[in-house]
Amino acid sequence: MANYIDEDGRAMSLTINGPTNEEQCIVAQPMTTPSLLPNASSPSPKGEKKVKTYRAFLDASVKDALAGACAGAFAKTAVAPIERVKILLQLQGSLGKSVSSHSEGGVASAMSRGNGRLTALQVWRSVYREQGVLAFWRGNTPNVLRQGGTTALNFMLMDWYKLAIQPPLQYTLRFPSNRTPEARKRRRALWSSFLSGGLAGGTTTTFLYPIEFLRTRLAMDVGGTTETRRYPRGMRDVFCSTWNADGFRGLYQGYGIALFGVVVYRALHLGGYDAMKSEIIHRKLQTIDYSDERSLKKTKKLNDTLTMKERFAVAQVVSIVAGTICYPIDSVRRRLMMQAGEPVELRRYRNSFDCFHRVMAQEGMRGFYLGIGPNLVRSFGGALILVAYDVFKVMI
Image 1 (cartoon, rainbow, N blue to C red):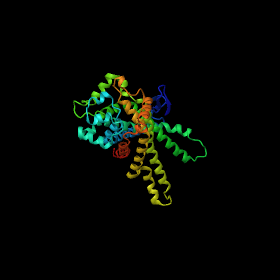
Image 2: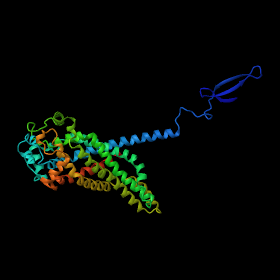
Image 3: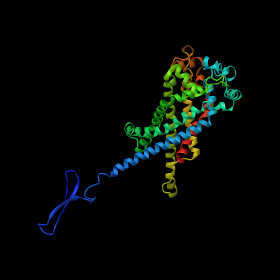
Image 4: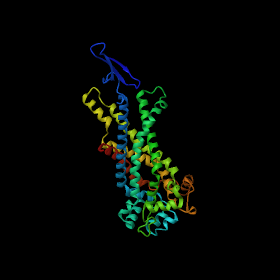
């Protein structure tokens, strides 16, 4: 018997049959011995590994998105009353005439002439007395949709960007050469956290900005009844009025300054949370006595998790710092939002730079920080999102 490869690339064997030379004939048949030629139809181990890695990456991305959506919806609903009071305080004195004319007296007239003199308690009482308890959740539906989608995309995209950013950082952050490999590794992780957080926030804002626009306009609808409300049918009225007045561009009023603010905020918020968690774990690992077996058993747990108290403390710190630094940008963004759909002659600001200049000249630095008190309280919601994401991710 002999083996050979035919013209079609198949492995064949030759067998000589017959006891004598006259009766002998040659029979060619396909080989059935798998060891002589690899089975081309079965994937190689390397290919199988790539497929498994890709599936694991997709599973992790879906898990990140679901956990982020649940965390965002839960946290925003919990702090919706504080959020609305903060927006009303932030935009007091900046209501256009066509807005305030829909609601006479009460909180509407007070907001239109407030100029920074109203307190959070006054706004809280006015909204409760004139509009009822449910008014504190006005605009919460688009807020939940926006925050659920924002948080889902933020956490999912952050992991994607982090994987894409780390290889280039391996070369750009190599110098100075006197740094130890461990120090360079930690520095790369720190920068990748901040950069990926900022990029994720910018990408998400680009896609979901119209929903944020609708939410802000609904939150500033201060009418107490259907007749006095500017948008009695909610999001539908906001969308239609803006589209009829300014078209698609109107839904992105204030987008430029918003994009800048969100990139900075998310870099500090998401990136700071990720970086601080890693730093705490690193410091804990340095305190372990590696000669003690009990201490060594704790090492794996330290690499995997932090206590709930530690997570919330880190999340609260980064939420307050990020919110305070970026608050002036957020104030300008919301003021520009409120101009969408207004006649040109009633608009106060030409662009974001003009808004900065006018607010500084007329109201001073205080004008950029109207409503900062409720915003600091609302930072509890930002911390809750980060901690809830970790919890939901484990549950899912």
